[in-house]
Length: 106
Length: 171
Image (cartoon, rainbow over all chains, first blue to last red; front, top):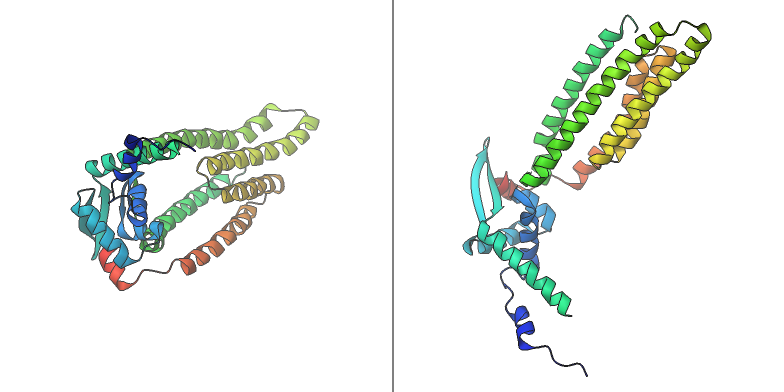
C-alpha cells in the first residue's frame, strides 16, 4: 500500500482558488490570460457560454477584482471590453502553478 | 518590359487598394459583429510587427527584382539561342519567385490556403509573361477568390449575428 500523501501536499488541492477552479470561469480566465483584452462576443464564442451564464461569471470575477470591465460605445452600439487585472493575472498564474504541482504529485 | 506594363501595374495597385478597403470593411461589418473584437498581448504584437517588416522588405525587393530582371536580362543577352532560353527561364523564375514569396507569407501567418493562392499567382505570372496575356492574372485571381467566397458564405451561416440582447451588451 502506498503511503498517504503528506498533508502539506494535499493542502495544495484544498487551497486552490475556488473562484477560478470552476470550468466556465477557468476558461474565461485562460482566454483573457493570453490576451490583452477581448469583448463580450469574443469571450462568448471562445468559451461557448450563453449570454446570461457568461454575464454572471464575469460579474463574479469582476467583484473579486480579477477582471476589469470597461463599457463604451462603438458608434451607436454599446461595447463591453474585458481585461484581466494584475490581481487576476497573479491569481491565475498561482492557480496554474498549484495545478501543475498537484498533477506532478500524482 | 511591355509598353503597357505600367498601366497594368497601376491597375493592380488600385485593385490591391480596393481589396484592402474591402478587407477592412469586411472585418468591421462581417467578422467583428460575429466573432467579437480582441487585442493581443504586446509580445505577440511585437513579433507580428517584426515579421511584417521582414516580409514587406522581402516582397518589395523581390517585386523590384521581378519587374527589373526581364528587361535587364533581355538587354544583356544578345545571342539569339540564349535569348530563347531566357524567354523560357525569365517567366519561369518570375512565377517561382511570386509563388515562393506568397507561400512563405502564407506559411508564417499560418494561412495555408495561401499556398493554393501562391501557386495560382505564380502560374498566372508565368502565363502572362510567356504568352503576353495579362488577363491571365484576372482569371487566376477569380480562381483564387472562389474558395474564399465559399468559406465566407459558410462562415456567415455558421456564425449568425448575435441576438439583440448580446448586441446591446457587447456591440
